Amino acid sequence: MRLERILTAVLITALFTHSGAVQTDDPAKKLGAFLGKWQSEATFAGGEKAASSLECRWSPQGAFLVCEQIVTMAGNQTRQLTIYSYNSKDSTYSYSTFSNPGSKPTTGTVDIKGNIWTYDFSYESNGKTTQIHNTNEFTDAKTEVFKIVSSDDGGAHWKPMLEGKARKVAD
Image (cartoon, rainbow, N blue to C red; front, side):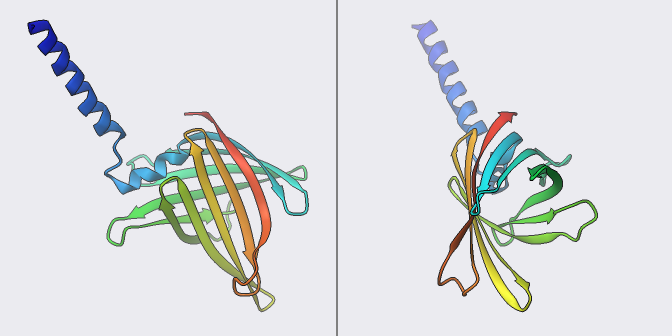
């Protein structure tokens, strides 16, 4: 009887400890879905292929997720650095990306609902505005599927730009 109580106490403690470690009460920890090293492959709408190597980790004091990526396309490599953060005052996620060392950063917001991250932004070129809609779906802890579509008519019609999949290769 005494051994049974001890085992029950140990199991209850283990359950509470485990659920506390997994529980994501801190919304900023949702950004941790990208922690580790990832390899991705993607195909543009025109058939061109791209591959990337991504590594994400928490900043030294744990407030930001920092991701560095090398993209290979048509034999050329480009580098990208993205920093993600959570704003507890307005409950939003944001990012800043440097597309190449020394370039001016782009910034935006990320909507995280469950396992789907959504980025919406636009850019202007030659007096024409293009809208971009990007989704990242974490289908499991080691797989992320992404799709980017664009619209140059105010969102009436969306065209595929890029689709791909990333696999986590290391923690």
